[in-house]
Length: 341
Image (cartoon, rainbow, N blue to C red; front, side, top):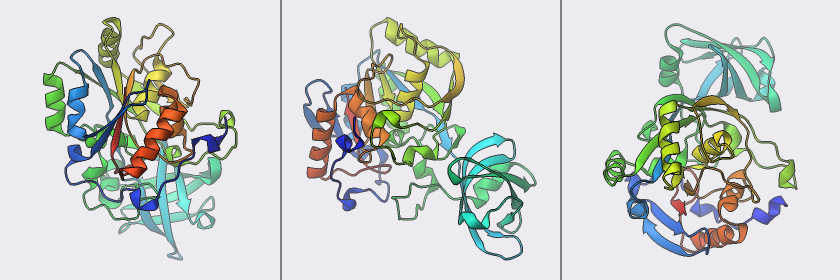
């Protein structure tokens, strides 16, 4: 399949720049994955499409304030770090701009010197391996000095850091938010639980590879970045019970979906485990665990629109996306949602 098979025309003004005032009042497109029927709703209406016994799987990762603005030691030249992946306690794979200022051995200073860094090696695709020096707890230093690593298509400043976190975020380690979860409020989750829907939490630390464009013409030649996941025994039991009773497993977001499909076996069961996944889901893939998906609207020609096309089919998804553009749905991280079932 060609990458261009997943192109649609997206006007720039539909890319949401700021989060909507109330999380659960974003719009919701409800899509029948078999026949392509579309309904236009508000996100909090999602409860009407969930049945007692369904299992909703949510990614409880928490975004690191992983963008650091600092200066080169000595010259004072401005530098921007973006933490990608923790290698050891104080050693990170990092994107550095401008890269030419970050040769091996170069040192940088952040804040009033509370945090310093040294480039100790070269990573993949132009990244740098960086060792940090500080006093106290790294996460607390980062919380003070770091900014949210918003995607490149968001130009507006985010006033409240928590709006780029889900209300159930817990396990720190992501370079980007699992954005399908941004629509849920505590109140809505309680209503869903009270309806008899099971909530199950997994962790997948989202990498910035999520935003990397597909650079090959044939999608089968694309290699996905690796991301770290954790599935607990408790969560595995909840999901397996739903499958055994014939109830639906509904993934909240492509990150939850990819984790479930990484762990799922040929009998449609999951088990406690952790590790790295680089699973690439595109049309032709047979889903083992996921029956339905809550997700945002994705970039043209991205791996994420390929994933949602695999759950339904390419024609149905592209038709739904064109309808979303016609109806002026808001796209991407702070945008509206779609329920594919």
